[in-house]
Image (cartoon, rainbow, N blue to C red):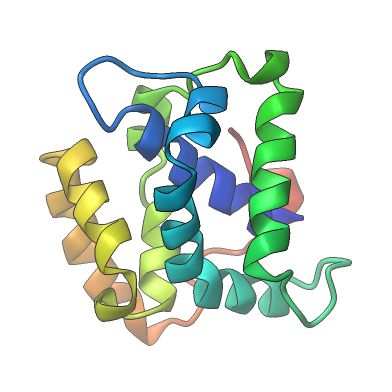
Length: 152
């Protein structure tokens, strides 16, 4: 479940804040499901690495893209009926532990849409992430992942 929560915390803030007027997560699922699926497909290899290395009860395999999509929607709707907009400020403060972690596990080429959207929404915050992301590629898991140190 930890890898899927990283997926939610990495993607939902991006899609909610893609434009000047943020939208709630339920609207992301209603109007941007195609883009969300493309992003999940891009980060799926990184999620698989996290699931394999985290030592959680998920065992040694990651759910399918469809199962991750179902989880993201279910989790979104469980928070105030989906009428929530994730904090952009918190997401930017935790950029390295969220999106940066996913980008560090799989090459940029495999996450082109994720990287592009991140550049667009995070703006100048992305520049620092880019430098750190390249330096962390030698370390397959730059942070210790446990459900106790995840915050959303």
